[in-house]
Amino acid sequence: MLDENYPVIDYGKGVYLFDMDGNRYLDAASGAVTANIGHGVAEIIEAMQEQAKRVSFVYRSQFTSEAAENLAKKIAEWTPGELNWSFFVNSGSEATETAMKMAIQYWQELGIHTKTKILSRWVSYHGITMGALSMSGHPARRARFVPLLEEFPVINPPYCYRCPYNLEAPSCGYMCAKELETVIKRIGSEQIAAFIAEPVIGAAGGAISPPKDYFKIIKTICEDNNILFIADEVMTGFGRTGSMLACEHWGVIPDIVALGKGMGAGYAPIAAAVASEKIMEPILAGSKSVMSGHTLSANPQSCAVSLAVLNYLEKNKIMDEVESKGVYLKNQLEKMKGIYSFIGDVRGKGLLVGIELVEENRTKAPFPRTANLTQKVIGIAKEKGLLVYPAGAGIDGVNGDAIIISPPLTITKREIEELVALLKESFTTLSNLLNTGRER
Ligand SMILES: Cc1ncc(COP(=O)(O)O)c(C=O)c1O
Image 1 (cartoon, protein in one colour):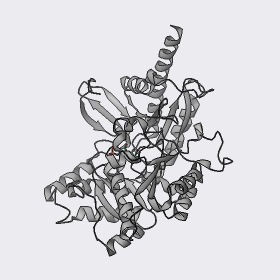
Image 2 (tube, helix red, strand yellow; image 1 turned 60 degrees about the vertical axis):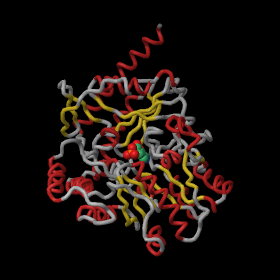
Image 3 (cartoon, helix red, strand yellow; image 1 turned 90 degrees about the horizontal axis):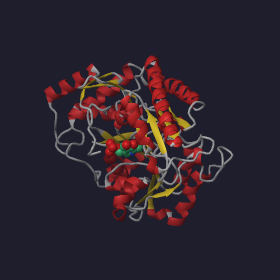
Image 4 (cartoon, helix red, strand yellow; image 1 turned 180 degrees about the vertical axis):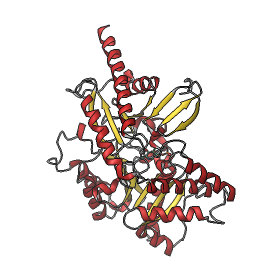
């Protein structure tokens, strides 16, 4: 906020940040679900220096670099199926926007020029640039620009806590996934290039994780209707949920995947749209160029940093422990439900955990928007030296509060215990505040 006085950060070490006034913060948000290996890792800083000594920048239409080539190779190795072609950009928004453009171009290279729409879901966030925002089902972020945006969000999310059909998985028959088929029929598959979704919904939904067969059904509907499937793994990629891609939990391989955040882990701005061989074949046989890109795309400096981050993840086997750490954290949070009636739902996957906050967990009634509850919780926690990430919740994008707990994947068990203790303190303060408000 422009009227807020932010603390000035001095340095970071591991899961902690220290400000100039000597305050310590446990970064249980990884900034914005980004600092996946924690702060101040010496190996990354060394890699940064080594690359800077060689060359920091070359332009992608003139040169490539060892760092960019090795990074692309590593991503191809780590991703499932034939997701072999990385197009490097600088932010998650650019990654989803490039993915969207690749999908449209794929059909054009095959001689099909009508398939230009990208379908998406409500309760989603794919980025702030106009293409990415057009795909985002995030009413608050769309509001100012609606006349300039495409109406790409068309179906409900797999939001079991507030099922739009008032059903329960798996007996629900996955109505929310099957909506996609209905919408495709209404619009006409000949108009649609792709469907995009976040495997676990981040900022818009507070870590909404789908029921088991959801993505299998979605992928089948896409294939049956000649529509590409884009996974937005900007938040979930690179081990955040315990596997390289969150899609892997459900055995689904996307045609194109958007990556960002954890890719540079906050040490450098870098992101990517990664396309499968199927997508690249007609492009390689046709125009031989993807119509996207930026001046700093594939700059050696960011690529070297990202490569060092991936090597660090690999060498220290960090992904292997994410699921068990996530279960441990979630168990502690579940226990808090009995203490604080405003904890409605605890959800998520791996170390992407969401807590939906409600006025009363028996009724699931949300706090009114005017209560500004998410920001209150974030503020209280920060005062106590704990950083948590704000998220939206609620099916209509109006009322609904959630926070995301997404510490660096390197967090230890002792640090998780400290995180939980600080969160408890924060919730107790919130509880007192709410009770005082009620008595008045
Ligand atoms: C799932 C998802 N996609 C895209 C983006 C946009 O990324 P960036 O903020 O790096 O542009 C975000 C950012 O929060 C995200 O969570």
